[in-house]
Image 1 (cartoon, rainbow, N blue to C red):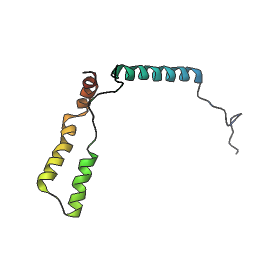
Image 2: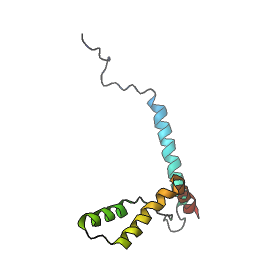
Image 3: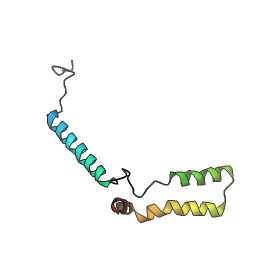
Image 4: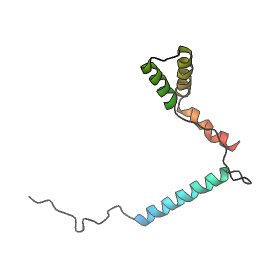
Length: 102
């Protein structure tokens, strides 16, 4: 039994694309306005707290353990840095938004 193909296989079937385009354009415009509102008015720079994951610390611990060059004090210090964000939980990232406005 042959599989029935749509009348035009290249035809897009996503509904009204004009509405999606308008919503995407509005979201981009709102995002742009928000980012410019955070920008320093005279100098043109942004200032905020930098947050990152713990990949570098974790890789450092693993590398030195595998090489046999581990320093227990330094490992403990790195391990503490990796634990802090996890213990604080996802809500600790909320402070990043408010600190950028200060």
